[in-house]
Image (cartoon, rainbow, N blue to C red; front, side):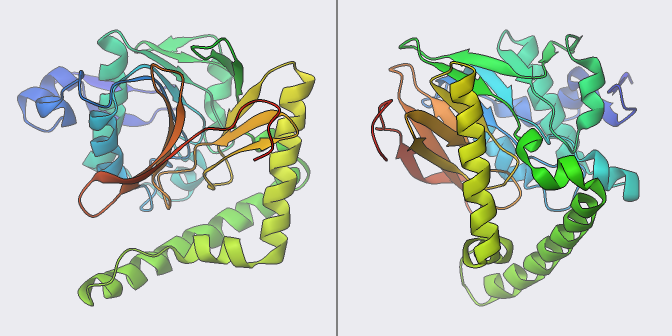
Length: 296
């Protein structure tokens, strides 16, 4: 059996030829020409290597939304948590194999590392299994508008100025996610829908709201300074699409809490897709009707 490794030494299990033959690979029933085929898909903050990663829902989304270009906008593998405690189930292998298979079948896959997988920044400019590693990228939409693609951690003052505090916050966040899983297990037994405790706290705590606003404005301002029409980022685990002083700000969210992605359709529409965990289908989509220079 052949094995694959990433540059950081993370075990990715069997190559997909072996995995498909054993029935373990997610692609056994793939339809790469599904009804949701898109021009581009943007996902970030998968946090593979943590119990909070909703890998099964992500695999279902990737099957339903094949694309010509797939952007991995940082924090795909959680190196911070893997250094503390090893966690790598088969479903996380399946996600990696799905991404490699997408690249091998001719789709362009671009990986822009974030702070949790910053080890990959050492390999900017290289290709691994057909996946391109870039420090940042520029996506040209069908109408010619340019979207700057960056994870966004460079605009996080905590990470840049006090990394120890970022590590502490990350551990507290993992604790909140663990508590959230127990809470939702109880809610499921009562027939209640999924509810995110951490997302609730982020929306209710004033300092958290101020942080999000400051982050969004800083990222949009930098996109404007660079001469781009908009920006796609992740990092703060809050899916959003709005106009900030003439710049289209898009955050594709995460696959730990919100299960969201940004997609560009072939007619140029941008859309935030919210994926339902229970039966693996989109529950709501939010099209971008915002034009450059228009107030959201």
